[in-house]
Length: 288
Image 1: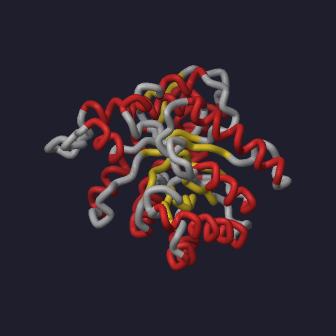
Image 2 (image 1 turned 30 degrees about the vertical axis):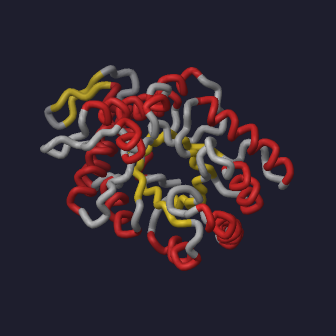
């Protein structure tokens, strides 16, 4: 399935949950964390489970639980697993041990509710504290069979380190955030899981979002987080290969199919080698 756009939806809003499937997002993340105040969390869990059951045929139903340094995360998991979500987004992940702990909890809950063990995937937010950001390379050396992807967040990290800016005057990430973003991207590819870029916080800035989404895809990310339905179409368009890209990729694949023993070929006046073939296959796969 496509994983271009990952839209957060507040778990305590029946109205927004009702509209969410029509937003066009590839993945919907029902949020039990930041968008839900403490006194509303019990109601949000009930609404979320009911929504999951109602939309059981829809692929891409995820839930963001509360962080493991709270008293709420186990209650979140216990409440939503009867709805068989496709995955769990884990905020403020402190490293691979956080994912392993959530995975162990899911083992027991899946068994209790008759779900296939391992069917609920996990995607951690890997950078929301300074210590967590420093653990990103450790995911590569860990055995985490539920891991579906890695994503990162700039907002919490900036608050954690007291940064008064995240981007420079030209709009580029400053050094700290660029380093974290790059490590999340590289670790995801090393693990063979999805690399999902962080959100564009200004949902009214369509031009800025388009630039960010196009840069994310060009840098090797498979998708991007979204915080407003208006962002979905822009993200989907940015992560969808153009007709020209598809034609070029197909030409490369066809050329190597005709000359399977060739290490390099000339196509349209350009030398094309095996890394170009690998990239072409990725482009065609993303279109599918």
